[in-house]
Image (tube, rainbow, N blue to C red; front, side):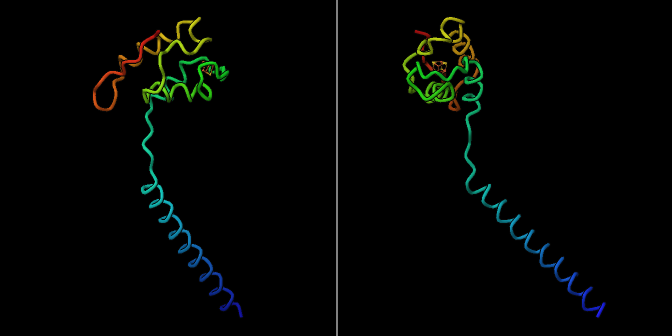
Length: 112
Ligand code: SF4
């Protein structure tokens, strides 16, 4: 009776370990297959912006404006009215000059 219970425990551990290994491998493969390359400049520019998330720039919050800047969809850096009063456009322009696009070109967006 005790031997049967011990075997049940051993098999339970083996089965759970096997399932853990299978699910772990599945997650590792999914992470590789669905990996999305993120441009870190979007986060950096969003950190420079005021984070008021007021939408005055015409984009959905500061992260949306940062993404538009990096992707060339914003007209100029002065679209952020709260940031324009505190020199944010100039700071972002300097950041973009120091951090070129992946192809080596410089983002041409102007302050105004
Ligand atoms: S206007 Fe400036 S502070 Fe307001 S959401 Fe746009 S980037 Fe953020």
